[in-house]
Length: 127
Image (cartoon, rainbow, N blue to C red; front, side, top):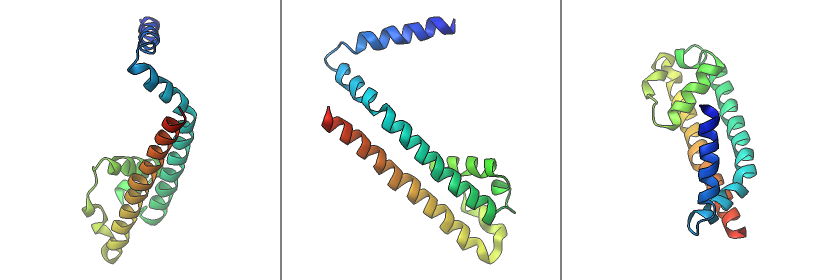
């Protein structure tokens, strides 16, 4: 069943790539694949860096106890699923946790999203 679904999708993309509207878009996306793969590696590096820092600095909190838990917490925080009360257990160091989360979100959302947009516009300009 999975093979049939894969073949149907391949046929769909081959058919759509010959149209005047979707054809150029698919060619641009095909040209972007390598640069987007490089972006994913950079993005994973940034998230793993912040996950490691979160685990080192805030390891006593439940969300940052392990690197995988820290990675999951930071991944969900990009989509808005974060709470400033996570850092209440830190006492006076609570503000450092909030700053950490703000720096991560600014880095991830603004800088890396702009990098993806730059990749897309660069490839679109070439094609």
